[in-house]
Image (cartoon, rainbow, N blue to C red; front, side):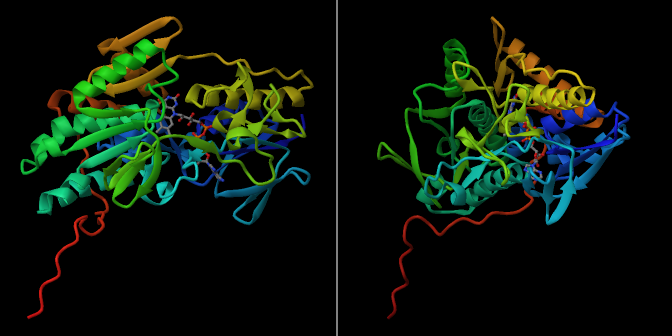
Length: 427
Ligand SMILES: Cc1cc2nc3c(=O)[nH]c(=O)nc-3n(C[C@H](O)[C@H](O)[C@H](O)COP(=O)(O)OP(=O)(O)OC[C@H]3O[C@@H](n4cnc5c(N)ncnc54)[C@H](O)[C@@H]3O)c2cc1C
């Protein structure tokens, strides 16, 4: 087999699983490209945002991952586009020639063009987002202690999460726990009844991808935790100090986390379809460009009732591996295989000792589901050191009811008081 250059764009779940498949092949040279020098375990981002975990504990250096893969190199850089005819990927002005390209650039937060969301809302897609949310929450609590103005204090202590999918539910649950166990002890001067965690969801139920019984359980748990659920409510605008809903309600708040949707990060040079994702054949290559494969969150391949595969880690891992194997099959003159999704189930954690999990026909909830959730997340987290650190943090939080990492990296400032301050009278 002649030496072929396979470029893998994105060191997410797609990238790592593709590289693993290609690593055993002596006739293949691999270049893994990413704008960050680490692989990020996004499912635990919400715990970084709520001071449960430290950022490096859910990230793993790409170069450390590649150490064992002798035919693979890493190129740090942001890809700007692809020229399928010339078989070139453009990375920060540099051409990177490829024989095969696997694109796994995932998604970014979708603000649906709503006014103020991109500017004043906080997405939760990368480490920077999570750190900003944490700093925002801690800054808001500190500012609330200092302010004598009750209206401003209430807005500082109102945390609005938009989107009742797994990310929104997990984040709202974690904020509810922070309110109950951390703020109550760290901020004795604050009146806890003023601290509100509000979860706003457009549809009339939470967790559309779960069975109604699991979603109802989650709803009851969050309500008991003190999370206010606003179902059937649509956000129409986010301003520096409020969220406006279609029903006419305005929620004064300085902190709005937007987890209401994502959109594909398609590259210029490739034609995007619904959700800004790239349509492929069942074998995962782009129909007009058979040397380009697209996998994971960015891939658009319908499989059930005309819906594409879910944008979850198991899809990305399985598609990344299959894209690599199909390239090898082509090189060996074998027939390529279509993608067959192996469902791994659905899980979401709700708070301390509580989660919901659906695996096949089995529905678990409560402590058992929480145990399964912990085990699965530890298993898929990359790096032995990270697993140990995360496990020790979780054990610490479990036994002490405390969140380990409440360090503010950047103090946020907040707009002027809501109520106009009276000008001093000139005599
Ligand atoms: C907060 C949150 C919680 C989640 N929880 C779960 C969960 O509990 N269970 C579950 O199964 N799934 C969960 N998901 C979804 C899961 O993380 C994704 O489905 C999965 O990460 C997709 O993998 P991917 O490889 O396609 O993309 P990603 O993991 O997003 O990786 C994309 C990579 O491409 C890089 N990249 C992007 N654009 C460029 C560019 N132009 N140039 C260079 N590099 C680029 C990025 O830096 C990144 O490393 C969650 C996602 C989020 C955001």
